[in-house]
Length: 92
Image 1 (cartoon, rainbow, N blue to C red):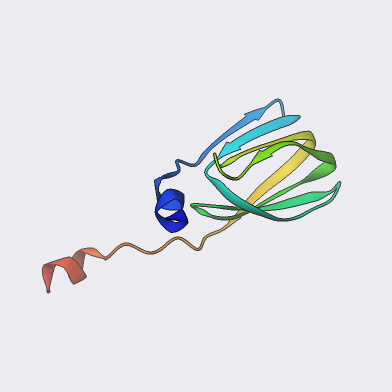
Image 2 (cartoon, rainbow, N blue to C red; image 1 turned 180 degrees about the horizontal axis):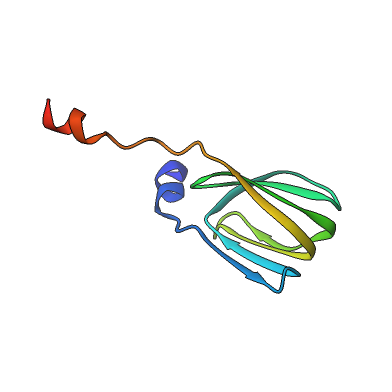
């Protein structure tokens, strides 16, 4: 059931003045410290980098994560399932 639930979560990101970030569609947090947070989303692994980062809220059941601090970068490692290409659909 959790796999189906994860597929249904929307992934949104709101960055406020590079000091606060709110995410939805978060399935887990792998690691965190004051300079980086690694979270798993429906759209791949997301690394948030910066200074004085703090997780202010985390609810993996709802898929929500809030972080505050000085945010300097966001980086996705894309591990989404690839959709079928045009030619593969045509030549089935």
